[in-house]
Image (cartoon, rainbow, N blue to C red; front, side):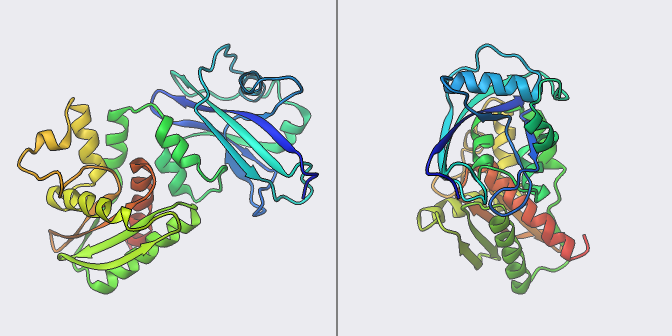
Length: 307
């Protein structure tokens, strides 16, 4: 379980202009015994600054040589519970860098350990990562992606427009509960801190809240759901379209009360018999993560109905 020491590491949130992030798949299983995806980076050599570690590791693992990664964007401290770990604690410093296009990482400068440990590399969108069900590290990786990725409005709008929505002949209270439970399973499997609410014909049929959420999320659930139900589209799509047009959702709809309607991601409409009859909404993470989670819950629910 480690010798009580702390391992310091430098890591890089490496994005392309479309907001995809490069992650490396490591065979060095995490505490749950599952290989997982993480950002390029690794442990500091003696005397290195966090920035020097991140620059060196980025080159070793990807072949990308960068002199300046800019300012530190995030730090994380956690206990290490892996069997056979040589240290008991870890401190990760994150930097951010953006390349124009995705590229295939070079293996030329991998260490012997990296040639064993790294079993794959892939550029991911946030939605793809949440939908994949693949393990990732750290737990807050989706939050880091949402907070630091470049925003390509056209690419994000196209991705969301391609996602399935609930459009069925009938949708009952039992269906709402099934949908809510499916969303809860996604939230737990992805280790997200989210509250979820399903409404049907102005009735709140299902509510569940994970640790880290509480009464403060109720208003967000309500205003996002109101926007999605009023407009018949995902709330994140409403925000992104407005931003792409150089404005805001509420500026586009001055007739709407800001205390009732807000276009932040995490709510999608439910249609039955050709009309909007309700919503499912989640709240608790950055709104791009909220949307990714609710979208995956909808996708899995529709699969149980044969859609």
